[in-house]
Amino acid sequence: MHASGEALWHLDPGSAPERRTPICCYAVLLFLLSGCTADLVLPSSFDQQLDHTITFVALREHPDTYRGRLIALGGKVLNATRLKDRTEIEVLHLPLNNAHLPRASLTETQGRFLAFQKEFLDPALFPDGTRVTLVGEVSGSTVKALGDMSYSYPTLEIKYLKVWEVVRPYSWPGRHPWGFPFPAPASSEKEHRGRIF
Image 1 (tube, rainbow, N blue to C red):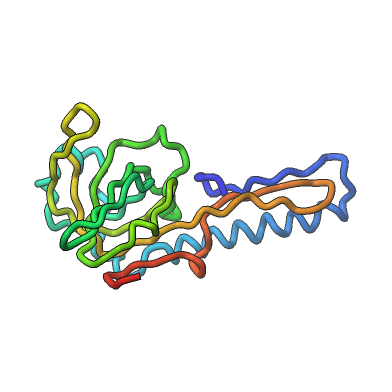
Image 2 (spheres, one colour; image 1 turned 60 degrees about the horizontal axis):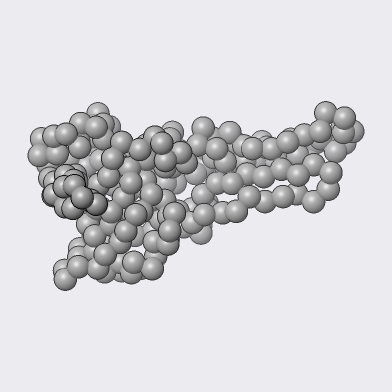
Protein backbone atom coordinates (compact mmCIF):
# COMPACT_ATOMS: atom_id res chain seq x y z
CA MET A 1 0.00 0.00 0.00
CA HIS A 2 1.28 3.45 -0.88
CA ALA A 3 1.89 5.93 1.88
CA SER A 4 -1.24 7.71 0.71
CA GLY A 5 -3.28 4.66 1.65
CA GLU A 6 -4.20 3.79 -1.95
CA ALA A 7 -3.96 0.20 -3.09
CA LEU A 8 -1.59 -0.42 -5.99
CA TRP A 9 -3.28 -2.59 -8.58
CA HIS A 10 -3.64 -2.86 -12.34
CA LEU A 11 -6.53 -3.80 -14.59
CA ASP A 12 -6.28 -4.45 -18.31
CA PRO A 13 -9.01 -2.31 -19.99
CA GLY A 14 -9.62 -5.04 -22.51
CA SER A 15 -10.35 -7.75 -20.01
CA ALA A 16 -13.78 -9.29 -19.68
CA PRO A 17 -16.13 -8.00 -16.91
CA GLU A 18 -16.09 -11.31 -15.11
CA ARG A 19 -12.32 -11.01 -14.73
CA ARG A 20 -12.65 -7.50 -13.26
CA THR A 21 -14.96 -8.38 -10.41
CA PRO A 22 -12.53 -10.35 -8.19
CA ILE A 23 -9.85 -7.68 -8.49
CA CYS A 24 -12.29 -4.91 -7.60
CA CYS A 25 -13.41 -6.92 -4.60
CA TYR A 26 -9.82 -7.23 -3.41
CA ALA A 27 -9.35 -3.47 -3.81
CA VAL A 28 -12.39 -2.84 -1.60
CA LEU A 29 -11.05 -5.35 0.93
CA LEU A 30 -7.70 -3.54 1.04
CA PHE A 31 -9.44 -0.22 1.59
CA LEU A 32 -11.36 -1.63 4.55
CA LEU A 33 -8.20 -3.23 5.91
CA SER A 34 -6.39 0.12 5.86
CA GLY A 35 -9.12 1.61 8.02
CA CYS A 36 -8.85 -1.22 10.52
CA THR A 37 -5.07 -0.86 10.61
CA ALA A 38 -5.36 2.83 11.49
CA ASP A 39 -7.37 1.91 14.59
CA LEU A 40 -4.91 -0.76 15.67
CA VAL A 41 -1.57 1.03 15.35
CA LEU A 42 -1.79 3.14 18.53
CA PRO A 43 -3.70 1.91 21.59
CA SER A 44 -6.76 3.98 22.46
CA SER A 45 -5.31 4.54 25.94
CA PHE A 46 -3.01 7.17 24.40
CA ASP A 47 -5.77 9.14 22.67
CA GLN A 48 -6.10 11.79 25.39
CA GLN A 49 -2.40 11.88 26.29
CA LEU A 50 -0.72 12.52 22.95
CA ASP A 51 0.24 16.07 22.02
CA HIS A 52 -0.51 16.35 18.30
CA THR A 53 0.54 20.01 18.13
CA ILE A 54 4.29 19.31 18.34
CA THR A 55 5.98 19.09 14.94
CA PHE A 56 9.26 17.26 14.54
CA VAL A 57 10.96 20.45 13.42
CA ALA A 58 9.86 22.19 16.63
CA LEU A 59 11.01 19.20 18.69
CA ARG A 60 14.40 19.17 16.95
CA GLU A 61 14.97 22.88 17.50
CA HIS A 62 13.58 23.21 21.04
CA PRO A 63 13.61 19.75 22.67
CA ASP A 64 13.80 21.06 26.25
CA THR A 65 10.60 23.04 25.74
CA TYR A 66 8.65 19.82 25.33
CA ARG A 67 10.10 17.74 28.16
CA GLY A 68 7.51 15.39 29.60
CA ARG A 69 5.17 15.66 26.59
CA LEU A 70 3.93 12.47 24.98
CA ILE A 71 4.20 12.33 21.18
CA ALA A 72 3.90 9.79 18.36
CA LEU A 73 6.77 9.51 15.89
CA GLY A 74 7.79 7.14 13.14
CA GLY A 75 10.73 6.39 10.93
CA LYS A 76 13.41 4.02 9.76
CA VAL A 77 15.74 2.42 12.30
CA LEU A 78 19.36 3.27 11.53
CA ASN A 79 20.98 1.61 14.50
CA ALA A 80 20.07 -0.20 17.72
CA THR A 81 22.63 -0.41 20.51
CA ARG A 82 22.48 -2.28 23.79
CA LEU A 83 23.80 0.01 26.53
CA LYS A 84 24.56 -0.90 30.15
CA ASP A 85 21.08 -0.16 31.49
CA ARG A 86 18.92 0.40 28.42
CA THR A 87 18.64 0.06 24.64
CA GLU A 88 19.27 3.01 22.34
CA ILE A 89 17.50 3.17 18.97
CA GLU A 90 18.63 5.74 16.40
CA VAL A 91 15.76 6.56 14.04
CA LEU A 92 15.60 8.51 10.80
CA HIS A 93 12.38 10.48 11.24
CA LEU A 94 9.65 9.89 8.66
CA PRO A 95 6.24 11.57 8.87
CA LEU A 96 3.32 9.36 9.87
CA ASN A 97 0.38 9.11 7.51
CA ASN A 98 -3.26 9.11 8.58
CA ALA A 99 -2.96 5.44 9.55
CA HIS A 100 0.09 6.19 11.76
CA LEU A 101 2.43 4.35 9.38
CA PRO A 102 5.82 5.88 8.50
CA ARG A 103 5.85 7.23 4.96
CA ALA A 104 7.98 5.34 2.45
CA SER A 105 10.00 8.18 0.91
CA LEU A 106 13.25 8.93 2.75
CA THR A 107 13.29 12.40 1.18
CA GLU A 108 10.50 13.40 3.58
CA THR A 109 12.73 13.06 6.63
CA GLN A 110 13.31 16.09 8.84
CA GLY A 111 16.19 14.66 10.85
CA ARG A 112 17.06 11.99 13.38
CA PHE A 113 16.10 11.19 16.94
CA LEU A 114 17.06 8.74 19.68
CA ALA A 115 14.53 6.57 21.48
CA PHE A 116 15.48 4.74 24.67
CA GLN A 117 13.97 1.60 26.18
CA LYS A 118 14.92 0.82 29.78
CA GLU A 119 14.60 -2.93 29.26
CA PHE A 120 16.53 -5.13 26.85
CA LEU A 121 15.59 -5.02 23.17
CA ASP A 122 17.64 -7.34 21.00
CA PRO A 123 19.21 -5.25 18.20
CA ALA A 124 18.51 -8.22 15.89
CA LEU A 125 14.84 -7.19 15.98
CA PHE A 126 15.74 -4.20 13.81
CA PRO A 127 17.21 -5.43 10.51
CA ASP A 128 18.16 -2.94 7.82
CA GLY A 129 15.16 -0.96 6.60
CA THR A 130 12.94 -1.64 9.62
CA ARG A 131 10.17 0.92 10.10
CA VAL A 132 8.76 1.76 13.52
CA THR A 133 5.88 3.72 15.01
CA LEU A 134 6.32 4.71 18.62
CA VAL A 135 4.86 6.74 21.44
CA GLY A 136 7.53 8.41 23.53
CA GLU A 137 7.94 10.91 26.34
CA VAL A 138 10.26 13.75 25.37
CA SER A 139 13.32 13.72 27.65
CA GLY A 140 15.48 16.42 26.07
CA SER A 141 18.41 16.05 23.68
CA THR A 142 21.92 14.68 23.42
CA VAL A 143 24.84 15.55 21.14
CA LYS A 144 26.70 12.78 19.35
CA ALA A 145 29.17 12.53 16.50
CA LEU A 146 27.62 12.05 13.07
CA GLY A 147 30.43 11.56 10.61
CA ASP A 148 32.73 14.58 10.97
CA MET A 149 30.11 16.75 12.65
CA SER A 150 28.29 16.97 15.96
CA TYR A 151 24.55 16.33 15.79
CA SER A 152 21.94 17.21 18.41
CA TYR A 153 19.41 14.39 18.72
CA PRO A 154 16.01 14.90 20.35
CA THR A 155 15.56 12.07 22.86
CA LEU A 156 12.50 10.14 23.98
CA GLU A 157 11.68 7.43 26.49
CA ILE A 158 9.67 4.72 24.76
CA LYS A 159 6.18 4.11 26.11
CA TYR A 160 4.90 2.06 23.19
CA LEU A 161 6.77 0.63 20.19
CA LYS A 162 5.48 -1.08 17.09
CA VAL A 163 7.97 -2.70 14.73
CA TRP A 164 6.69 -3.13 11.20
CA GLU A 165 7.65 -6.19 9.20
CA VAL A 166 8.25 -5.62 5.51
CA VAL A 167 5.83 -7.54 3.27
CA ARG A 168 6.91 -8.18 -0.29
CA PRO A 169 4.49 -7.31 -3.12
CA TYR A 170 2.14 -10.17 -3.99
CA SER A 171 1.28 -11.08 -7.57
CA TRP A 172 -2.09 -12.63 -8.34
CA PRO A 173 -1.72 -15.47 -10.88
CA GLY A 174 -3.33 -14.90 -14.27
CA ARG A 175 -3.45 -12.18 -16.85
CA HIS A 176 -3.52 -9.23 -14.51
CA PRO A 177 -0.57 -8.98 -12.10
CA TRP A 178 -1.09 -6.59 -9.26
CA GLY A 179 0.64 -5.91 -5.99
CA PHE A 180 0.12 -4.11 -2.75
CA PRO A 181 3.26 -3.68 -0.68
CA PHE A 182 2.28 -2.57 2.83
CA PRO A 183 3.34 -3.20 6.43
CA ALA A 184 2.17 -6.41 8.02
CA PRO A 185 -1.25 -6.33 9.73
CA ALA A 186 -1.47 -6.07 13.49
CA SER A 187 -1.71 -9.82 14.04
CA SER A 188 1.83 -10.36 12.74
CA GLU A 189 3.54 -7.29 14.16
CA LYS A 190 6.04 -7.32 16.95
CA GLU A 191 4.77 -5.10 19.77
CA HIS A 192 6.56 -3.76 22.79
CA ARG A 193 4.71 -2.20 25.73
CA GLY A 194 7.43 -1.91 28.37
CA ARG A 195 8.19 -5.63 28.47
CA ILE A 196 10.90 -7.88 27.08
CA PHE A 197 10.16 -9.30 23.63
